[in-house]
Length: 96
Ligand SMILES: O=C(O)CC1=CCC(=O)O1
Image (cartoon, rainbow, N blue to C red; front, side):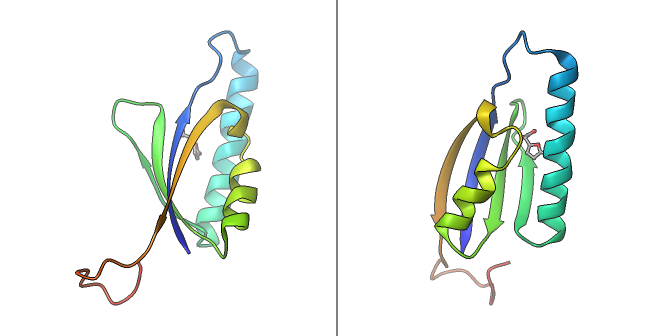
């Protein structure tokens, strides 16, 4: 199942810079592992915002929920999710 996810990061302005740097490094490590596993298909910065558009390929809504909740930045993100399905006019044979 494909999910389009918008993540907006809202770190507290007074957060300890070392804590923020650790959260970002941990987030990057997990995000890159999930990309290597084929679960986090796309990760795009939204120009001009501390936010991203992502596409996840996961087995279920429950797996998406669990994946998002384990992100180190989860407590500091606003997240919007939309499920994706094939468009009847798409010329692509698969969902990639
Ligand atoms: O910077 C972001 O948009 C949040 C984020 C998601 C994966 C990552 O490494 O950072």
